[in-house]
Length: 165
Image 1 (spheres, one colour):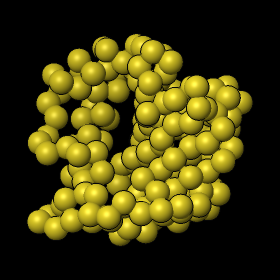
Image 2 (cartoon, helix red, strand yellow):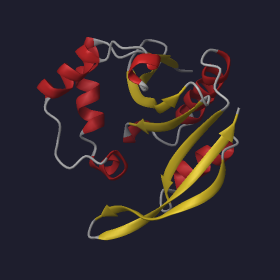
Image 3 (cartoon, one colour):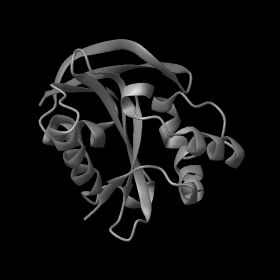
């Protein structure tokens, strides 16, 4: 159904579309559109492994390697065997089960290959599709960060989800 793979130079058009999808700016803390130049630089510098960079972006692609989303591990902490996770999918591919499949693959990879004990996700309280996705895959809400995101002139709470692997 889908593959998880590293970023490739030919992903520039996809990454440009994804990163400039304004609906994602709220959680990515983006305030201005990304240029192709900046994204090309990002791809060229995305060569460090997760142990060195403490983060890694996996491209979600179809079996023909056509990209349609990303799933990120960040704040990687190998000592305490945990990381944070985020997922972003192009709008035209959302609500088709692709995110669930990709996130399930990442959960397995995190446990088997990275030997992580837990993953954490921060999700705005009004992002119902993401809340349902993470709950469906066994994440449990364990807290709330009050007024954590400032968006469209107002503060929003963020739920803290955790999954013990």
